[in-house]
Length: 206
Image 1 (cartoon, rainbow, N blue to C red):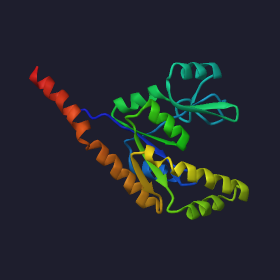
Image 2: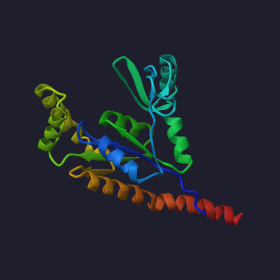
Image 3: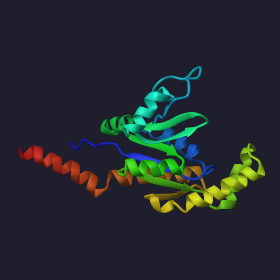
Image 4: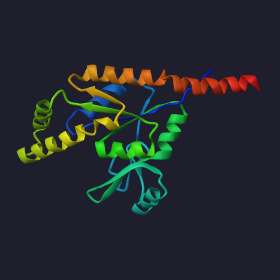
């Protein structure tokens, strides 16, 4: 029997494109998926749990992990580090779970450098005008900030070539269906199956 390993899927795209919404809808439909839990140096808040909301570490511990290349990606935000621990992702994959990492473009490019065997999915809006409307609907940002986000989004969309797949998020259900198709097709890729099957043949032969 083929002992199938999981795959790391990186869902990325410009701010406001709906990454979180697509990821949540995806997880409601697929129980084998694991959400990649981040590590942080910020203090644990009331109601949060270690290994559920985040992995909580001291600044010194986090910086040691950076120097030992034990993070797939990291960034510093408002005085605290946030990052993706490599060991957690690898353990989930080994146990047969697909791991989903929902992340901004810069973080995704770091992951590509440290874990190139991941599958990179770029979520884009139907148009920049639609993206502008979505950001405006949040009602949390000034006109100047909206324009800055759109400028950044244009730059990020130009990085599309670093990704394996592109999904247009014009409709949540349709976008989720496309991501599910990508997951299925990746598991059926010849090189994944062949590698596992050849290992089985070697066992049978001995």
